[in-house]
Length: 231
Length: 322
Image 1 (tube, helix red, strand yellow):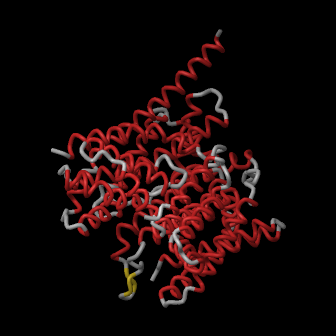
Image 2: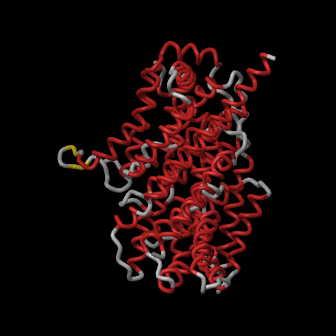
Image 3: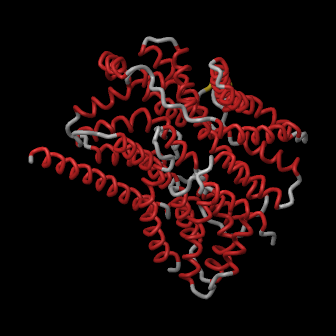
């Protein structure tokens, strides 16, 4: 067993820990691992180039930028925030938990590409969430906005991840089934997907509770700020 | 027929435009970065076709280009975020346009959804409208074009301005846009150089194989750790399964394969929430949402990931050996 390629992992860990720019760190790690595994330089370069262009779909989100940029220039965020301010019943927690539910259900149906950070979080969920925070706090700082946006992004991720494993025809289930089939264990995709359901429910409950706690924290802070003003 | 390759050409065009605008504004490094990336996107299909035909030279050139991009990336300083127009004008426009602003924004998920659901049935004169491969993503690309046209109509500005806004956002995101592709390439290199096999060998050499609970714990934590390293639970799964899951848990301790596979994979997903290596879920959104801390999304996810992992592990422990 050749353990030297593991140094590539060490490059990653050290590079991220020291907060170097991740792009050269990642390329460095790839070169280190490949060379220490005894790959020839031309082969390694070809592997790097081929796998890079084969995953071009990962940059598809940039196509949303012109439309989103134009709408934001025309006041989309301002409108979403103001509209949230007028909707009395729609609290921060209800907004985020509702989004979590829709995102997770869509992912369960295999529709993961429909929502996402570029498609829905930046143009819609984040500004609406900021509007909801403004309903709670009398003064919203940049740090508050950053926290809200991070929570919105986390909610999107969690809904997507733990929903998609329940869908029978998507990568994860097929990968599991394929692995077992190679090793002589035959399972139907449905029997695998079904066992993802308990975690899907747990993830929904856990993230909902966390969102609710986040809202409670903001409410308490607002109450404290009002008390101080009254005193 | 609409294919995903057209989307790549659109991206290449946007990247080239971003590069040329930067060139005109004399941001040399930034221009070089986007132009080179645009060339990789435009030439990607040629690279893959030549590779399939047995000519590795274009792929090698692409590999060299990736290294050049890595050298250029640290020179791309995040732009001191220039907001689009002044706040007063945006508010005025928001008041004037109202809910009409939501229409193009909602068109992105809506058109994608329609293509995902019904794309397979659409055809013109007997030719299928969408290629089968990557139909949802092709739909997303189409949705972006439709939304841009609709947005330009709603805001009564030329489409050209949308492209300029897209360029502004792209410059604000900078090199973070590149990371998911690089990490996918790194995963390939790790797989080819046997990093996974080495880790699995290390783990199974130091394992108290007699205890079912200890094996299960090492398996679950191994899924998390390996996913944190590789940025992807799919890469971790076969390695941990071949090293621990199959020989020890299933064959020796009689674990239920369906439960072990499904919940083991989900343990890996908890790792995805924790790692900067899953750049498209954790670092790109931080850049896209203009967070000041690039690890802000991960920080917001830590306790969710830990709780979901604990719950999943407990359920797996109770169910898998029945």
